Length: 473
Image (cartoon, rainbow, N blue to C red; front, side, top):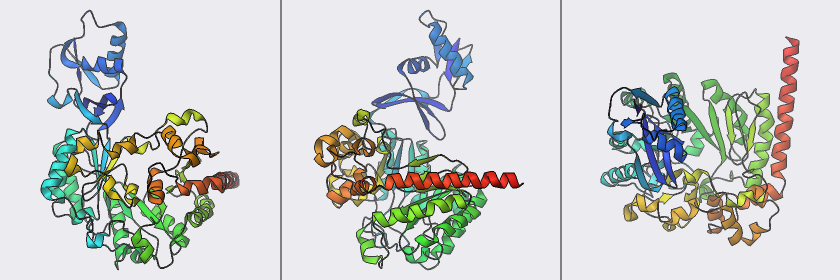
């Protein structure tokens, strides 16, 4: 008897994650134990699994994988597709690359870190961009999410999409302002068998045009959202709040929910140099932002939990669930966190800026000295993912921070906070191991307890009100 991996599945490995099962077309990854991997290696359609070395434990694994639809049995030999055979990449595992394919934009946003109206960061040439996609494939990157600037203004957009797809890398999300999103654009995605999730910015009822610097931006965004929902394309919204538009938060969430948008991420406006120049007094510091988010939490439940809401840096809520997650509670509160990585997200994702810089995440663009990050066209993506300043951040652990930062080392909240966000530290101190001052404020001024208290009170009231409503009916 012979076992063979079914066509959607393939075996892959990377440095420090040698055994993985990947499922096409969305490239979901399952990390395997060594013994699981060894069993699946035998499922090549050519190895006789009736051989003496096949143990009873291995036969149990075969049976389980066949029941799960991962492998299939054959009476005769039958070869795998070429791409299904095990392939090892001698660089660190990156689940997806978040790539700004251009620094240009058709909007004039008041807070843009890359000053996109002027194209300050430019974009890679077509040849360089194609080379970068080749390198992504050579490094085993499985998904590419596209942003800008505004990605749809890039003239060779569809050529880049087709090149990505030629390597069977998936395109999970596209970040756009929505102005250029039309039926014709969605048709072209569907022609390629693609249905990416569109993340579209919307900065409050009556305020979006002001924030984005273009008359008609609000109308265009709402049109794009309605179109995506109607066509069945996944969509989410990101909203930047400031003193001017924060009073519209409740109304904005209700409007988005009525359209059919399932989730919104709400964040304080990034404190960029452009925002400092153009905020017209609307900038909020961390305390103002936290106070406004605390004020909104009861409204979320009073409005019936209309959609999934992420109050960035504060708390996340899921529609129709009383579970919630406080962002700053990163660790358990014991010294077991010391060996944990400072940032879990950067372990499986990276950001590539318009000029080709490799960063652990997009917020790292707040660092004023971008030259500390490598240019892919100078050192190559494989080296960037194997030996560069990028990896200094990706590999850093809580214990490294405590050894380098005497202030964090003696803080009473260190085993819960874990030092906070490295992007914030670089922004504030230009030091990878510096203090995240936002987290210092949240912990030392009691905001974490207030988030919990306000949320629990809002949930309790919601449950009481709904119990009374059921009793009345």
